[in-house]
Image 1 (cartoon, rainbow, N blue to C red):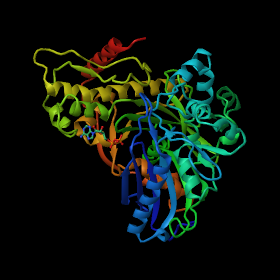
Image 2 (image 1 turned 45 degrees about the vertical axis):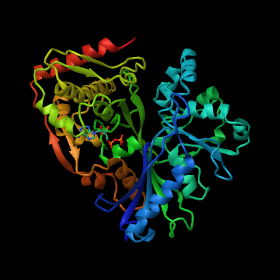
Image 3 (image 1 turned 180 degrees about the horizontal axis):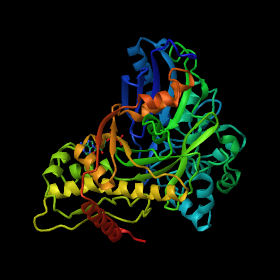
Image 4 (image 1 turned 30 degrees about the vertical axis):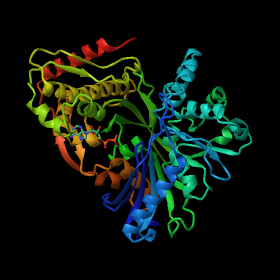
Length: 502
Ligand code: ADP
């Protein structure tokens, strides 16, 4: 065993959209100490979402210090791993570390017009081919272009090499290292729209389209790498930053999806599904995203990704707007009590539909109601809408994988707040016709970052050891009659057809 042999923990920083967390994982991959702080959301205009970069940094230091104190100091820690909300974009002064503007959050839609213009110019096919992504405001590239065009003096200063651009991982490493490292990892780079996932380098053609100087961009490293060491004085002992991955990729590592065809899906506010496609960059025919799952020792493992905008958020809507439940948990008992013959379908297209439909103008609908439809039937249909959308994604992934000569996913590893609902987990398995598996450690995102950092310093042995640690907590096998499954999924597809606008 290399360094890290005598240490007790790996420190994982999980910088999410709504909160920042610091967790200490032990050698068994069990979270031992956790500290968390909510992150204020800033909404300066309709469709705009920002975060205060300084606040993110201040919270991160505070939370790391808090868990390190619980553990008896930084000497007990082998390394730091970072996982983060992806795509969120920040520029700052290379010398002073002062941000020039708030971080523009992934949800922010201010660059929709720019994306439309680029599409009209016929650039989407090239973007998809090179980056695996689609022209959507979601990704960092157009956010960075906006910053350069709209923040006073930013473009001139960027051209002189005075500024740094980074996603949140990069911002945290810059600060943790006292401003000495301007680095990111391949998974975060792969979400910027500026990174060619075949050559693993920033793409000059796309940079040219968006008028972005290369000097702004960080160096891109493997997910397990030497990203720098923490500045002396920050935590007492200097700690190596040894692992980074964007949140969904980290969750995929935490779920030990290391073989082609292994798939995970995280059910929080939204849902993000990733399937490992091995060394193949699969060019989706179904408008899924191709992305870097992880890069280790210079070798890229790719994934296909699809997302559902409204997963747990649909349950929040039942609770907050419809007042059908007083807590998310209540949805389970109601779904169980619903009339099993009910043909109600809820299409939660509140903000449009994501993959594989990508219709931003679609809106929600409840179909198939009869005189005896009640709250329970609608709650059941709302939960089932998340299962049906997962089926959409899994079918699209399977088709793309078969097209590339790969084996389609055969089961699904799940995590996130919603999978505590056993009725939902069973329904998901029934609609997919495949097993759904819930792991013992539900902190898969933070765990993935801890694994990456721990592997780099010898605290964890490697992918095989990590895969061996993964443990099943519950398995749900499909028990629904095939005819019923087809009928239910068919009704969903018909209902989606009714709300699509194009
Ligand atoms: P996020 O990380 O996006 O904040 P979490 O993973 O914490 O999300 O999950 C919270 C979401 O899960 C909420 O949207 C909530 O409605 C949903 N949720 C939590 N518990 C249940 C449950 N028992 N049944 C259905 N949905 C649930």
